[in-house]
Amino acid sequence: MITLDDLHRKALRRYEAVLKAYFTGADLFPMVIPTNKTLDRGAGMDAIFDQQRELLVNAKNKTGRGYTLELKPNAKTGQSEIRKISFDTPNDFLYFIGKEGDYQRFVQIVEQIRAASPALLSLLERMPQLVLEQAEKWPALLLVTAYFGQNPKPQQYVRSLSIAVPTKFIETNRPILRTLLDHLIPDHLNPDETDFYKRFHLYVEEPLLKIRFLDESLRIHPALSHISVWLSEFRMLELSGSRVFIIENLTSFLTFPAQPDSIAIWGGGFAVTLLGGTDWLHDKQIYYWGDLDAHGFQMLDQCRKLFPKTQSLLMDRATFDAHKHLLSQGETTPVTELPYLTGEERNLFQQLNQNGWRIEQERLGEEWIYGGLPNRGHKLK
View 1 (cartoon, rainbow, N blue to C red):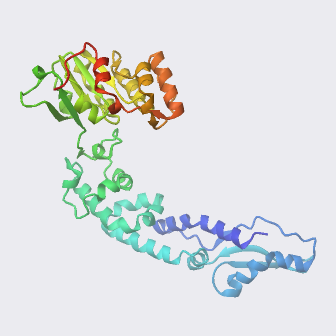
View 2 (cartoon, rainbow, N blue to C red; view 1 turned 90 degrees about the horizontal axis):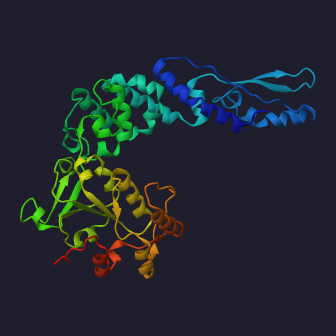
View 3 (cartoon, rainbow, N blue to C red; view 1 turned 60 degrees about the vertical axis):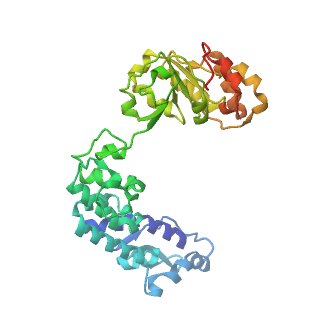
C-alpha cells in the first residue's frame, strides 16, 4: 500500500500543473492520486489495518482537511481497504503539500504581472516556476521589460538606460531578462547573437589592447611609448614594423627590451584569441612569449592557429632546464591535444601539465631574456 510519504511526493509532482491551471482556468479537482500498491492480505485483518494506519489517521475523513480516502470492505477478509485517494479542493491539496502561503504569493504576483504586462502570461503559463523563482525581483523585471517594450533598440550602454532599477540589475539578471525579452520583443532582437547586449541592441565596452612601440621610429607620436586602444580600433590601425611580440604577463610586457622594427602586444589572459580578425597581423612575423606552464602553451597553440607562422619565444627545453629552481605550482588543464605545437613544445607542455608545474616568465633573468631574442636588439634603457 502507498505510504504517507509516497503520497506527499506524488502530490508535490502535481503542484506545477496546479500553477498552470491558474492561468488556463482548468479545474483539476477532485484530483485522484493512484495508489499503485496492493496490500499484503496473508497476515490477517490486524496486519491489513497496520499497513493502512498512517493514511487512515491523517486523512480528511478524520482531520477535516487534506486527502480523502474512499474505503471499501473486502468480502474475504472483512477489513475495510483504501480504494481511492483524492483531494476534493485546491485548499485540501495545498494544505497537504504545505504550499498554501506559496500559492497565495504566486497568485498575487501573477495578478501584478497581469496588470503590468499581460503579454507575459502565455510565457509564464508554460514556465510557472519563474513566478516564484524571481518573486523578489518582479517589480524591477517589469520596469525593465516595459522599457524595452517602448525602446526595443536602445543603442545605449546598459548602465545609461533611464530605468529606475539599480545600475547593475540588468547585468546580474541577464538569464531571466533574456527569457522575458525573447518572448516580448522577438521581432526586434538580433536572433543570431548569444551575447545579451548585442542581442538586445545595447552597446558593449570592447576589450582594450595594450601596445608598446619597441622601436621609437614606429611610434604614432613621439611622446607615446605605449598606447591602449579598443579592439575594433586596433584592427584598423595597420601599425608599421615587421615584427610583433605577443607577451602574456603585464610586467614582462612593460619591461621587454627594445627591438628594432618591432611592437609588443599584451596578451594577458586569453586576449590572444581576440586578435584573429586583425588582417594586417598576417603580414608580420609574430612571436609569442608566455609562462612555461599548461596555460602558456595553450595560448601559444591558439596564437599559431590564428597566425600559422607564429614562433615561440623562451618557451623551450633549454629555458626550462636553466630555471628549474624557479618551479612553482601552477594549474593543469584537461586539454591534452594541442595540434599547433611542435613536437618539442608538445613534450614540454605534457610534462608541465602532468606535474602542474609553472615557471613564470617574469622570473627569467634579464640576461637570459636578452640572449633569447631573435636578432638581438639593444637593451631597454
